Amino acid sequence: MVAANYADRNYTTVTFSPPGIKVSGAKYNFDYSTGTLFNRFFIVKPDKDIVPQIDVQKGTVMDIPCYLNALPCHGLSNTINTLATSCGDPAGRRINETT
Image (cartoon, rainbow, N blue to C red):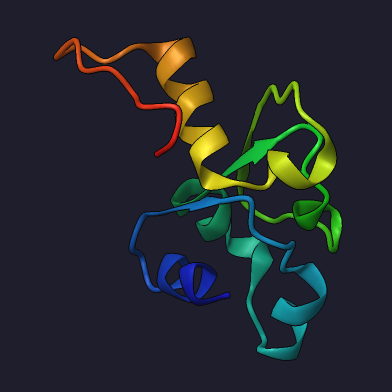
């Protein structure tokens, strides 16, 4: 919710596996019609993660694969490892599995 608030104020935000904000955003009078959230609020969401399914996501959702069960898919270390494996690191750094 904090990231969406910043996006609504013209800051670009990236969130990892957040719960959706449609219902709670209505409580705080977010205006979804302006397109601000779609241009400035980015959500990285593993496909089996259950937390982002709690409510409807608003913003640009980037689905990434998760080959684990639902609960481990919510872990940030799994997301970082998936992104590093998929995208690589131009500096050639390796991601430690225990990070």
